Image (tube, rainbow, N blue to C red; front, side, top):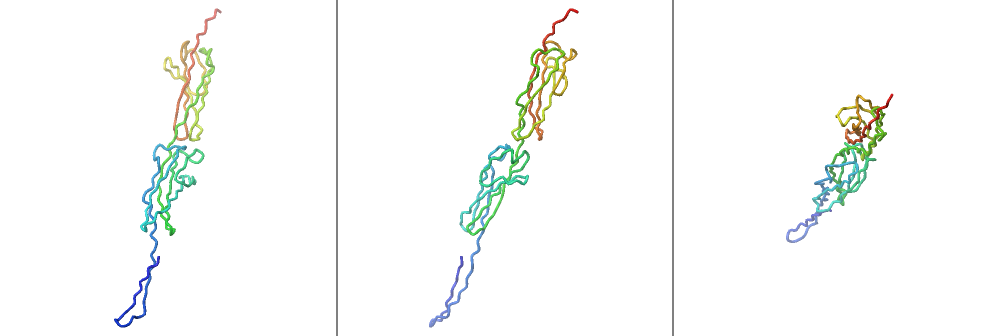
Length: 220
């Protein structure tokens, strides 16, 4: 707006020529007063995030708010007040930032931001099996097989450890184990524990067991 001040001089008999001056009122830009992201803890690569900002304007306007989301990897994740993270676009340890921008009708603008960090989701051991599962003797070669998944889209590594659960002795590591009479006896329970580990050191374990059958003696 332009404000004009006009003065007309007068001496009580005649009016003089009017004189005026004017000033232009500058725009006062809006101010973003707060930015928050919900939730701000317990965030995974599949969490839905909501960004909320408040802004004021000294000129009495109601600023328009817009939102932009980015990750610390440099990826643009979208706009709008809400986004749903996915393992395809985010990873554990990344920082997710919402930048809120307030704009008034005179194109004045101000921005501020808030950030959250993505936590790792541990892998899950989905299945463990030992084969053969029956007819096991003190000389049987056993094989342990496990599958695992990770909600972060990671490919967990799987490690195996064998124990004789009956006497709590360790029998070795690796997917295969050949029993002997020095490490096992009829009636013993042989356990394979599979541990899945992701790239962020998250782990999960599960196990499967078989029981050693007696082998009847033979008359030579």
